Length: 405
Ligand SMILES: Nc1ncnc2c1ncn2[C@@H]1O[C@H](COP(=O)(O)OP(=O)(O)OP(=O)(O)O)[C@@H](O)[C@H]1O
Ligand SMILES: O=C(CO)[C@H](O)[C@H](O)COP(=O)(O)O
Image 1 (tube, rainbow, N blue to C red):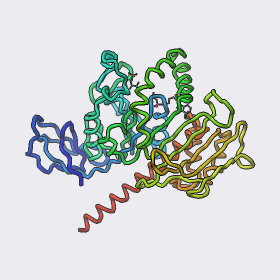
Image 2 (image 1 turned 180 degrees about the vertical axis):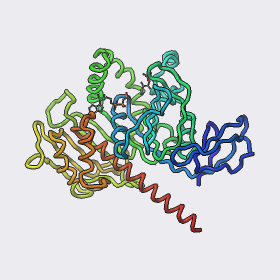
Image 3 (image 1 turned 60 degrees about the horizontal axis):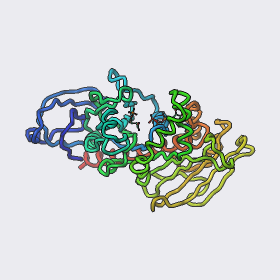
Image 4 (image 1 turned 30 degrees about the vertical axis):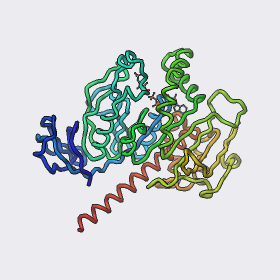
């Protein structure tokens, strides 16, 4: 059982009980306490002065780091779908909330911990990527509280107005995903993560995606897109990119090697870099675990038009860590034939034969569904479900033991 002290905490889950309700914390006033049962229904409320609470803390915390416009939302939609059910913003709340809630998962966007609003950043001459524009103390306190099973009042950064809006209540979910620029930047927050992912989009590809979205959908000019990427680059290199060394899984997106001097960024070479030795996470492999494999699946069972498809798999080293790397270059012509590739992959944590193919077909309209980005995001989603189920099973066994004692 974890022991936590209430600071900004507003509500407790039913798994928490106040162990020393009369002990006050300096400078804190009495707060309203709400108790929820496991279905999220309020069961009772009361007032107390801050003190120590013992919590069972069933929430697992996943960190997803990437620059803006690098596919975090798309990944989150795939992850939520693996657990079944759609995610939506908190009901009746701020229409500009960045939070997405489903039965199992709550995804919070770390932009909500910007300590400087748009004007404040402009006045101080800092970007949103700069740690000085973010409140890591509050991020740590609130992620820790949620992990301990305690609800929090989280601020909202409004991307429409560029202002910090009044906070919203976030109750502890089964799986909390913290996505954004800095989930692994602060050591205290990093230590709270049960699993972490970094989306590493190469500059060429990032540029192609930005043009596609910001020019086609948002009416920005090519020059302004180039200028915005250039302006962010020093801070991206200093504060965002280094986080990939801490990630348990990295999805790296590069230009294809199948088309010489390709600069269109449409055909992609995608690597899934998986750290070895991570608890509850067994890396996926192709054909034979630990071997080095190169595979061109095109032929009778997989239709491939130019430039074809190439897979690779093998052991490697990444920032001094032993990793396994699965790579796919090229794109699928027919998603229903993905089952052929799926049947050659192992340790994919599916619940039935063809689950990856089914997920990919279900979301064939999501960006990246015909290439390694969609395939590897789906696989990581399945691995997170597996990790969650293993941790939950472990906790169940511990409480059964405790109830017998
Ligand atoms: N796998 C992909 N293949 C091709 N394009 C992609 C892919 N993933 C994302 N994109 C492009 O990037 C855009 C941004 O994707 P998404 O909204 O998922 O990113 P994000 O990181 O959540 O962005 P932001 O932080 O700005 O909200 C999409 O609209 C699409 O144009
Ligand atoms: O890097 C970002 C993460 O999404 C945004 O640029 C940052 O949050 C600032 O947002 P805005 O440009 O809407 O003021």
